[in-house]
Length: 324
Image (cartoon, rainbow, N blue to C red; front, side, top):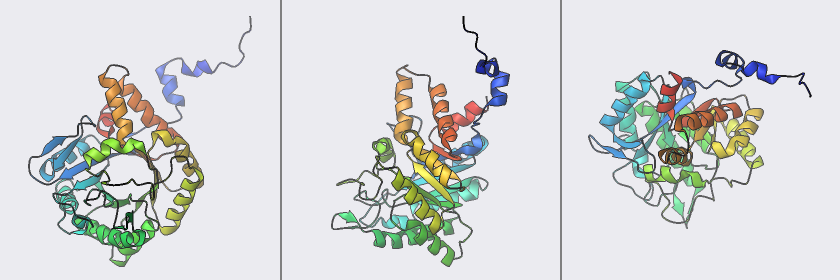
């Protein structure tokens, strides 16, 4: 009978040795929690496709933020849904828009919590696209000017970081210039640098009320079949002044996270998106999988692939599980 000379199992014999040689360690410090804010008071509207997530009015958003901070989660990313939408997403650029008032309230009530704002227009436009639509398509350069106006209002409200997600060419440069020219050079930019046109965004579009009213977003979001293009997009955003680079989605794009990690020393973020979250929730509700084990395995795989930061709807649960 063959007797193995090499025995890797020696370092798996019990939990202590497994902990000691573990190569990837997921921490609450890695987590960013997405939240959705709406107009009104005492509003806590369940998002049917994302169990445990809600559209929150500003008063309840502040309450939720306090809980997030107590769990040790360092940051949230905020998405706003205005009461009224128009072709240019005007609420997005108002000093008293829904997101701007929410940021002010959060920084007044929970100043230690790091507040990141999503910078885009899909939640604010009546057509659901990510900028100014001209002849049936998003006008890239007109949208850059709108993005510059938007980030200034976020900065004035007290946002700690801005995160452009619209995949407009030149968006990081336009935003960096707008911030710097208006005295906000200390505010970092986390760019959705490699954002794919993915079917995994479905539940988010319910949450943010941002589904396109015509066509789709394939003229500006990336083709899921492309990998080299992602590296090109990342390199452009780095040149334009991005401080953090994001890959979105995460789970089906672990190879992209790894390749991005290999070409830059900047922090890399990955978005564990709504569809990835909802699939786990649905399977767990049917008793097909162990939600905690699967969720933590997914988050660990994202970290293992090279992500420093993970945006995830599992953040609160993961924080509790990590503290058990």
